[in-house]
Image (cartoon, rainbow, N blue to C red; front, side):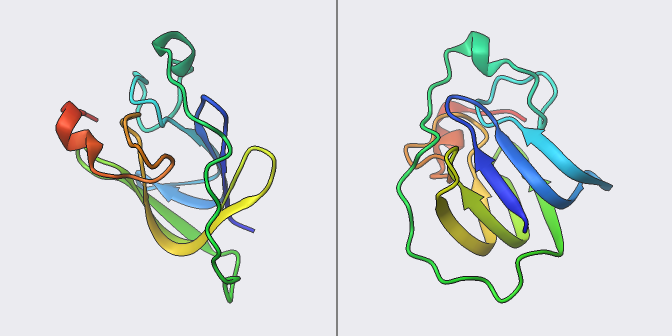
Length: 129
């Protein structure tokens, strides 16, 4: 099962066949606070930056995917969100399913009012990454 786990006040933990920056990973911890010096990867900067975001966002009522595995392409858009393409389940820190989708945009600037999803706040705050 391809998953993105939302860590309370911390990064996104991905477990899948992840295609990112022309490399394949099977686990990755990606920044969602916007402060990492190693974007798109987490470097622990959320601990110093005061980043606060729930690990238990509102749940969506989405149907099960026909397939729950396969490649998950992660594209850090220029100065914007992480674009995920492929079968993926986004889950809370306690394992509840937030969303099941084949395409989504996740916030990596740290300012979205709809975390973990992008709401366009990166434009307002001048996020670079």
